[in-house]
Length: 504
Image (cartoon, rainbow, N blue to C red; front, top):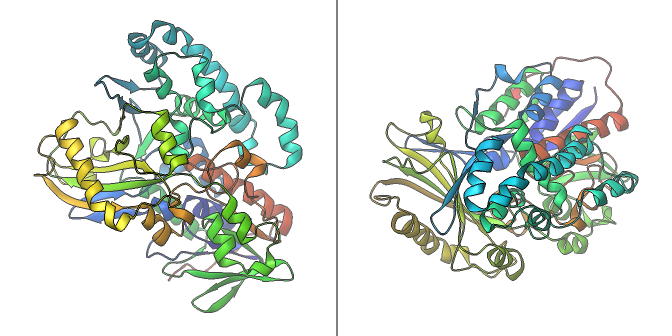
């Protein structure tokens, strides 16, 4: 029986664990925290339930493919709830748009801002549908992206303007700043700047349109629990509360992991830890020629975020399940976050209010909210231990007094904060970057760290750091890429075996 060790149990690690265990390998999942989930961790307090990371499901077919790989049906494990609209987007002037996959409703709303923009909607969707076809339907996101693959894709990428900044592509079709924002903000969902993230990522709005935006009853952590359940049903081993301190390498090959001072030998290692943590902290420098400490530190890391988890004894109908509230500044605010690395006076925010859809996420008549504010990573000089309480106070003042959530402070029962320093200390994210490497052209596809380690045989990477990138669908696709690579390198095990269920 060939053994595989997986470091970290985020969506990448869990997806890889399910796929590889179902193939007949003996997989052990090592997780430093008390529960599996990684960035998709869950917080429960005083009757309120919060998803601490991802808040929505797009491309449910990608999730279903993981269950299918294990001879299971996703619908036997998850209760998916379609969201319509996907988001409500409030602009600084008080206007808003309910962003939906319904073309006629979108065009009617866009026309109120600019009639010509509405007329260009179908042309824009046709354009980005071709990006979606290349990445999803033609499988570029589910295979190793080598230099030959890159060269083969390049003529099509040039034809589709896939390498120009996402915002530049959007401006070819839309004139009103509000319409431009609606179709260019998606790179922010994967830690990138719309003003330099390549337009290939603009396949995301089309992915949403054709696949929908969904929530799962009980929160996104129900997806974590479902994947863990399938993994255990197939005989996988989960070791929680067991941080990995080293990936063991002998003769240029990964031979296991060190946890609790003990070497756990395996035939291969898959790391779902942050790319920088994997190489810089878990692997001795003598084993790394490409990914030296200097090279790792020279990479560009994406933004972080400031999170507020709030339980409120009141409900606010003006908030939908997903609500964006925007500053007047767009490009300059993004530049302050990504380039100037300063905590600006103004801010834009994303509110996730799952109790609008699933009442079980909060006590009766109450609201479970998380507020996410994009902020610089720790290359900036912000001292979050000092700044966090005042910054949270500033956000609460805005929501109550400027946005109109009356009585917010008076009815606040739970308030928990999560800062870039927490991303660094609790999640091992280099510079507190919430989404790892910034998705710019020079760090996309073959320019990202390989799913197969370039330095160490039988070491594989899944998660936001590697190809195809961040976001739940992208992270889950990294597991499919790694499954194929492991099968090529280790071969298919002879038959499938029952393994002892073990949760430590």
